[in-house]
Every structure is written in structure tokens, then in C-alpha cells.
Length: 132
Image (cartoon, rainbow, N blue to C red; front, side):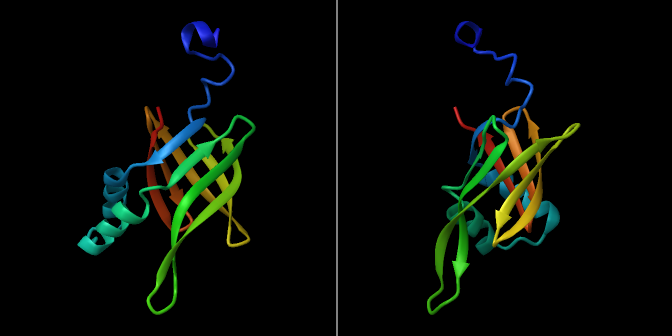
């Protein structure tokens, strides 16, 4: 059926499934809601540092948050890329994503509306667009 219609009776109900790429303007809008005085430097950081960040939700309920920037202290400080692995669970209108961050399970909430996924929690509010 999928080959003929592009629809899957098994996987279509789970809107979180797939690959998602970081959406800087939407992430900046989310950050502004929680911090209205977002500085130009903070906007630039979101726009540049998270460019390669992506989220993947697999059918076996595995979740991957890849290329998350982390500032490493030093003189000068450097930015290194982190990858986190975990699980996702479906809820009534949202998803719970539990990722292993710094050897601790951090729960985040994922919401999918059309082709936009927002991921909130663990000190992050990120926005993603469905990858084509």
C-alpha cells in the first residue's frame, strides 16, 4: 500500500516518526516566549551553533538528537557536538522523549503540528521541520 499511495496504515498514525532538521527562526520564536529579552548574540548562537542539529524518531521507538552544540570551557572556549540517544513514547496529544544526557535520563516533551516538531525540556526548546 505504501508504494502505491505513499501512506502507511502501520506508521502514519505516529506523527513523530522520521528525520527532522533544526528550524532556527522557529527555535528563536520559542526562546523569545520564555525569555523576551533574548539578545542578538543569543539569537546568533541559536542560528549558527544549531545549524546541523537534527532529531530522528525511529519506528522501534528509538530517538536520536544529533549534533547538539555544547560549549567546552577553556581559553578560548570551544564548541563540541554532542549526540543523545533514548526512547520516545506516544501520549494523547504529545510525545515523551527520554534521552540520556550526561549519563542521566532527561525527559522532554515533543509536539508535532503538520511538518513542525517542537522539543521542550532539559533546558532546551528546539524546533524542527520534517526532512523531505
